[in-house]
Length: 187
Image 1 (cartoon, rainbow, N blue to C red):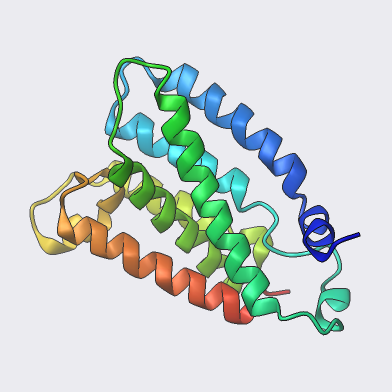
Image 2: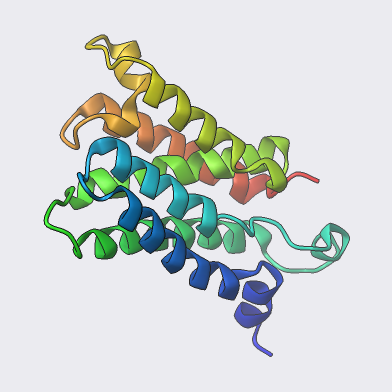
């Protein structure tokens, strides 16, 4: 077998791909009328949670004993998971009359995936969902403010042309990618 196939199977990627499409279609079908920032970000969150489900292997000792360049594999895994989450949400929203632009969806997928990667590196892969879910829930509850702090907290709901929201998502994404690539899912 090829290394990419082995890696994907060890992380549950084939099942995650099927679940990704099903979950995004189901979430969109329930929430698309009307398609609001709340429903669009919740759909992006669901896509990220499914696509980042396999951030660590089933046998940490086996992973640590191989001579595989893990940082490159981890970087690629999280990057592809982020892209897939964004692309599936963008494609599924085309089924309806209302759409959010690619910048909005991509920013949210990237930021939420970065949070998942950061949580996996800090707390362990089984807790990777905690950070994006918590940030999304807090930002959904907090009243959007015009202050910089308010815009940082509520970045998933900010307009796609808001530089504070974009920079916040970018910093979270880069931090999460770096932490997960270097450290991997903590045991």
